[in-house]
Length: 506
Image (cartoon, rainbow, N blue to C red; front, side, top):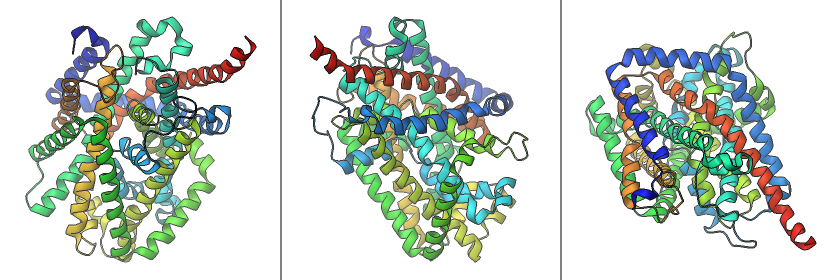
């Protein structure tokens, strides 16, 4: 690996920023909390409509791309066959962009919603999971789908030698792509990637720690959590050294473990009828009220529900758009734009919905049937992770569930952070080396680097709002860049479709 190959702007600068943040979070936990809370309030309250417009707008654009002539473009040579079969490709698409968050929020999001005045007014039973389906459904997955198509077009059709956000903006930015504007875009992208990583680890890892200590005994401490983070880091670092083959195997394993967990809870938990019926109700409510939910701003701030949840989620997914769509586009060679977009919806949206319907409705059903007073436990302790454990203990032979959750979370972490690491490696070089050919030393650097901020956040004792703020701050400028990427993609794709006609005329 030659020094001249490395891009210092996207390697050194984000490293310095994250290092400074780590120091600040550790030394000034209270001040950090106050500052992040203030920033979150300002962005969510003042610019909330921006996130909602971006979300609904990209969803609309996704269907335009899929069913316009652009949808027929093959990401590669015309007529080229897909690099992976449909199942393997879908498994990598689903697992690369969700990490272990899908398990954490599937199990407990209804509890958070039950505390919200807006949901209590509508009815917790009918609307808690409806909002989960909405927040993890078509709109956020449209971010991934559209960008995956754009990046796949850039890499496999135009065969660009740089795998960066700025490169995707070249049709609009032109010569400024290689100058300061392009560098700013790439630094923002890498910082957003790191912020998203930190949020994911910091939110979901305590659940993993609680599952392990419940199964093996002991008490969750900061140092136990850090030990688990280190073990997870070692797992995905070992895997990423094997390149895409390692990601492919882990993605398939993850899907099988995840599927086994869902089937066991559905059939063995004793709430099968309730899960199915409540799931259908939630799907109906989400579908019938989709436009209203997508555009509700709560202008009078009667509950601030969209500010606390919808806006956070759109920001959260925008941050993850830095890495996941690049990986999705990279493994989509041979597929059409339409297949990438609609396949993302099939594997991403459907799998996510099934997870929330089964795991979320099991907990709600256990609450209503009297198996557990999850809401009372959470209200008394404020411990969401302990509450989830209490719910899990109501499932027959619950140690099986704990084992499946532990291995599923590790597999989700490993597969998603393998893909992030491979993408981050490409950001580190002035020209792409290809994910398979990225140097092992650089893979190791990013694999370890991605764990630093989560550890700092553990020491900072930040609340959920703090972690959400990290995502919202990073997502705000990234949303503008994503709009620029989409405009660039549409412009370039239309030019590509016109090129045969121009060649025939000449």
